[in-house]
Image 1 (tube, rainbow, N blue to C red):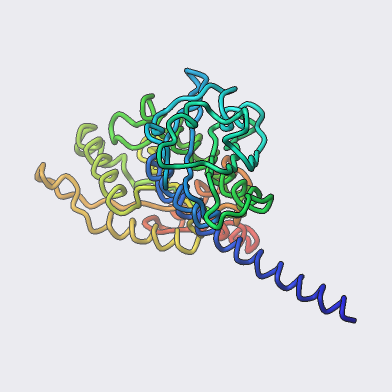
Image 2: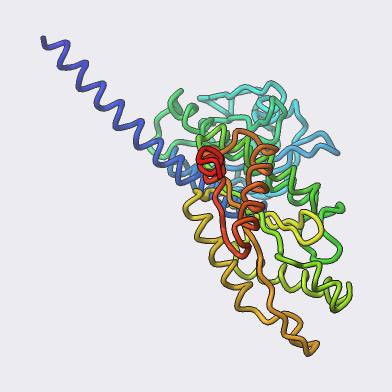
Length: 363
């Protein structure tokens, strides 16, 4: 009987710990998807490392594909002088060993471990490294970087539990770093629409692919809004294509002003736009679409050109995983919902789930 009570206590403690970890990593996931800037992503990662494993010093090294080595991207806590920006070969130091093997490593006595970098040993003025925990940051088995933690605050050795927690963190960090790197790389390519300066179709598909992967891994959600201007052809026919183009630019400006920096706004083609809303359930996406609709309705287009035109738009909203299991189906359903909005009289918002209701009712 006593053994059963003990097992129950241990089970309850394990469940409490699991809930605590799920809550923690949920908050981390939201924080990491709140920005596309690499520096901010790295700061969020490093801030949460210390919450998981309190230590004297911790650093994140990133892999440089062109030079095939690691460089110290960010450090926190007590660190040897000159560590920031230092480069290591893949076979050099504990970090290099972890990057090369792709396996986490705990070293209890770093100064006597042959894998510990001679440079760090010689430059560790005023700081004596005792133990190290090092974990790889990977995506699809490809190395992105290495997280290294030195000297546990309470003086005890690093444990397998510490390793497990940091691996969960870097699993999320890998996606965030990958998103940031993609954003930076794409910034140097033709990823924007020449007219509106919004993202183009190429970037939209890449961004949707990343969001789907993130949501599958972390059981998260996101939504998209597909919008199309109503009777836009009349603007071109009555006022000319130059004014039509200016109208599209002004629509883009409205979208940028309404949405968050982390939201992805793309010109899908012609007078169609797609908005990707990370960490946004469909009920919230509906409210955002209604706000955009209202802002477009209340805006006087081409006012500086003396026209003050009124323009409306039709909207389709779909969410992952509520309505679709991949990006192609998600776009298709949001597009169909948008066309339903047009068929119902235009200038309105339709949710993808309304498609099945309409079909089943024979309308």
